[in-house]
Every structure is written in structure tokens, then in C-alpha cells.
Length: 324
Image (tube, rainbow, N blue to C red):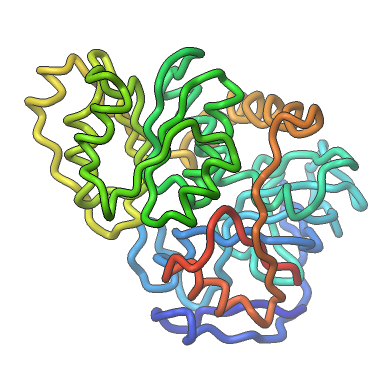
């Protein structure tokens, strides 16, 4: 089988496409023929050894994918060859075959497209866990989303609208903000041209957002937190900017606000029953036409380095997938 390989840490152009032996499952594992794999910003960091998850070299990048079960290992009870699944594996997705623990897989209905499913687990799982579980976002509340045109950001916009919240989307260009409006954002902020804090204040009548969803970090974190409403929840989702902000704790005291960490990978590992319920809810939303992952671009396996380069340089919006 063919696979993308990271033999040394570096930029996307250092990746290679190699032919490897077919995979076989261990106990409790599945081998899956990959139909689509999603590209996420952490993939860009992992190949550079800049992420908290550091797989030993060499490895195949790619954290989430969908496909058809090829072979089931000893002890597997929920899946059999021929079944359609989506999986989160942290690595190994950018290949024709991938191996996943049974506990890392969810069954896919026949009417959910592979590309949609591949773009579903990490971004939408993270955003649902952040907003509904950790952020307790309710109908009628206001959500501010930073980096709203990215994968998790756009997922947050869509999920918040289903919940019934008002959404303010912040991004770095008019094109990206138009994309956010197409997917449900009520108001938008171009934080490269507008004062984020003042614009949020104007849009909320001085009250601020009830919840801030921040997958970016960097310079916009503090003004966003200074804008938060009384009893607001600031969701720390990631640091796509590359800079971990130092938020002054006195702001949390003065606002009666919470700084809430969102670590979806450990949520999946530590609380699998709850995570499965979350996914079941979103699958029903997809089947009902309420939710549709925004897959905006597709790449072949040979184009995987380009896909990662486009992600790294923010040339893409929404979700992009690799289809081996």
C-alpha cells in the first residue's frame, strides 16, 4: 500500500510517498481501506515536531479518516469487514490503509459521504465537545469564534447555530468572513483591519460574548478575553498562531469568567461513552440535513505535501481532504 511518510522533521516538502507492506490488525484493532482523510492544522505541527503529540520517526501523518473495514483483529465485536467507519488515530491516515483501535472508530450510515465523514471526527468532535460539553453554550447566548474560517472554527459556527446561539465570526480577510456568513455567522469581524475589542463591544451593546471559542491563541486572545461577558466561558482550543498567550488571571476574577481547556483527544480516551453520544447526536444532525461538514477542497495522495503546505499558509478555508 502507498503512504505519505515523514522520515525527518521538517516542512511539508520534506514528506515522501512510499510503498509499504499491507497492514494487519492486532487484538482489538481494525485495518481500514482509507477512502478520505482530513487535513488539520496539527498535522502541520506534528511533521515539524512542534506539537504535544510526538510520534517516533518515521511515521505516516494524518489523524482522522473514513473508509471500509478491510480486516478485524481478535476481540473486535462492533465491526466486521465491509462496514463503513470513521476513525481518529492521531497518525497514519494519509495512506491507502490505516490501522485503528476499535474504540477509536464510529459506524457510518450509508447516506453519509466518506469525505464528509473524514472531515467530521476531529474538527466537529472538538467543536461539539468545546461548545456543548465544556462551554455549556445555550440558545440565545452569544458566541465569539476566533479563526472562524478554519476547520474547527467553521465547525463551531455551524454547531452554535444548531444550538440556537448568536455567532460573531472573526477572521483575517473579507473572503473568509463571507465564507463564515454563508455557513451561518450572524456578524463578522476582520481583526486585521478592525479593533477586535471595540468591534465586539459595539456588536454586543457592551455586554460581550457569553462564550469565546479560541483555536488561534496569539495576540487576539487577550482582547477577546477582556471583551467577555459576566460569567463568560473562554474556551482554549489550540494555538494555530504558534504563540501561547499569557492571559492575566485578574480578568477572570473581575468578569466572574472561566478559562476552560478543551482537549478532545483525551476526552475521547478518558470518556469514550460520552464521546460516542456526542458523535451520535451529530450523525443525526447530518442525516436530518442540519449539519454538513464544509469540505472545500480535495487532494490526491500524491498531493498530500501540497495540502499540508496550503493548510500551513492558510490558503484554504473550511475542511480539506486527501482521497487516496
